Length: 194
Image (cartoon, rainbow, N blue to C red; front, side, top):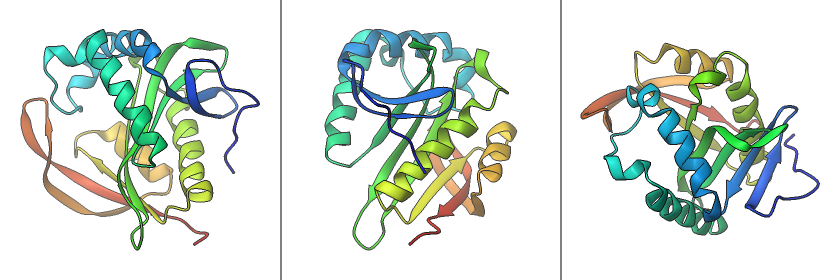
């Protein structure tokens, strides 16, 4: 079962909490925090992230992205959770986001996630996805969550399997990653309660 905090910070639209983490939908006033996180991890994330030009890593661009995220979250089109440590909410350490939302007879979405290079192997992403998945299944009543992972991203493949996602096949030429169209391994997780 997911947990919501007792109160929101002034810069949050919505938040979830775990034992160690806070997962927040942020207002555009947090563009500096987001830009700092993205710049810190640009080289580390490049190998597995969608292709971005230099303008993506600017305050102005991230302010626009946060504005779009907030609007689409309010409409139920995306669930963009930025991750911070509960004892240090001023520094972003990752993101888990749910997108490609299909309602009605499908009730499905896709998940994407990334973590700060200095916060690996501490169980943070396991904790974050477990909480966020519970919110999507229990509160939003989604039936299916899909994940698409590069074949060589062993850390992410191990994580998604540990979280109960099942292998489905290969998605051909799924996303433009680090300068080229790449195939991804497809996984899914079903809501056991619906």
